[in-house]
Image 1: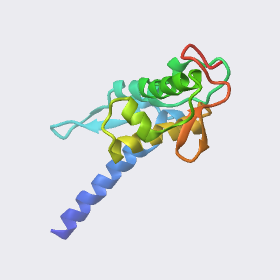
Image 2 (image 1 turned 90 degrees about the vertical axis):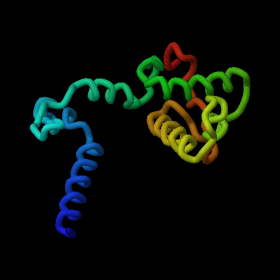
Image 3 (image 1 turned 180 degrees about the vertical axis):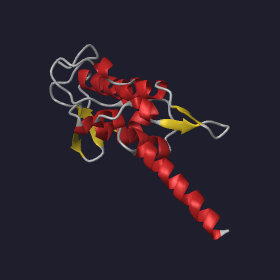
Image 4 (image 1 turned 180 degrees about the horizontal axis):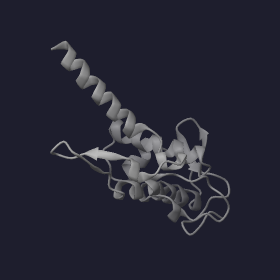
Length: 148
């Protein structure tokens, strides 16, 4: 019994590692090399559709002239609310305030998801964090049409 549990745990850990591993196409491996087991236990080629969706969810480093359309809708929504506040001369926002503005339930899971996105935007140069947990547009980033 314990050996079976250990094998199940090892398989689950392996699968989690595959999901969390960096995209292999970045390291020269071909997408066709990856296979996924089907319902009947036989291997079948992984679909390229999830990979196409994943590429859009990555956040590029901000540079002059980079359009907001390079970001997924969730990231664009964060930028839009902060751009509106900057235009109105209002200060930074917390993730709790953003969740309320987006009509989300202000619960830890939602707030932490927003915080993760905001922190990613900070590290990529789209946002600034002038005080811990308070976010605003980074200098030079404005308007949804582009990065300048």
